[in-house]
Length: 180
Image (cartoon, rainbow, N blue to C red; front, side):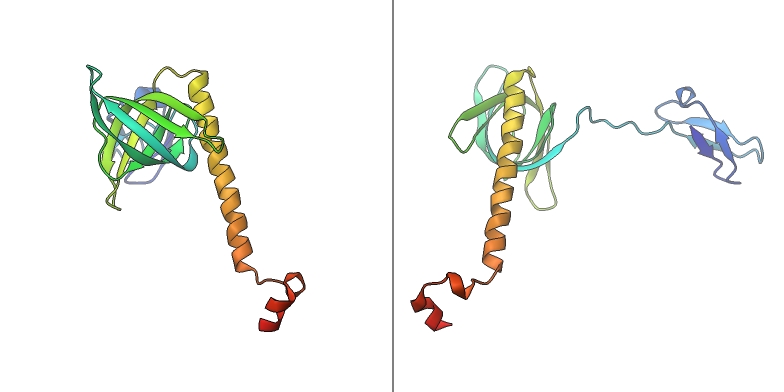
């Protein structure tokens, strides 16, 4: 990795494996300045996230299997490893069961573990949920979320486009034409 000196701005090459994750003291061989260098940031995300906006039902259970909370939320994004859910209140820790349906009313359910639930600036809560037992059910769940989101988005685009365009007089009945 390349490190610039904080004082004289000279540039040096340094093996990032030599640096601690909390930072290491290094010295500039030109000016003698000693400063702390950090290794490059590693992306925490294992999988690429895809934006969605799907309605998701959730159930939260404690270690004994007792229902703690339930409700509805909006999936903000999804990946092969987990989902980000926006809810009006904080989700209690524990096992989470997520469920959604598609246009044909097929039910899709997956299990997850709550990683965090924090209050956002808009007053809603954003919860990170890691999928448990990633198998074909989880992959089907993810595909359905993305497919439904894209279907809804496409149809919303068409509806907006139709509303914004003025009707053509030739396509209107005679009674309506006279009103124009």
